[in-house]
Image (cartoon, rainbow, N blue to C red; front, side, top):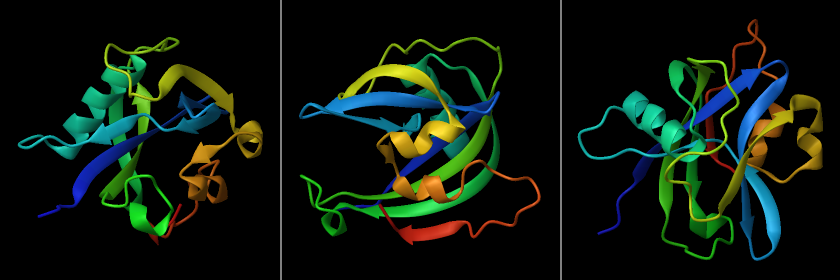
Length: 151
């Protein structure tokens, strides 16, 4: 029986830049937020702290839940149509201001870690694409937290 996997994603923004994982698949470059799947018995904030360290070498403090998305791969033409992941997007801050250069356990497609200017996000392939509608985050806006199944 297939199960829904819970995952957490980090929105780490400082100096009008966002920390992203640079990835490559089939010769195509794309970017993702740091984060990943929750392990059994692990709180979701603990999962996010662990994933940021493993993927980006970033020690973070988890702040606020801002978005939730279902990712149902069969609806987006993914190579594996069996994935269903519930993703929780949190704002995070670096505990020690430094330039994360990569962690000890990068994702399979990950080739780097980059700070990308928020005003350049339309120039890159960023996933989920829905983020482009909501960045930069504004402190005086009430966000519709649940996005549904979007790309």
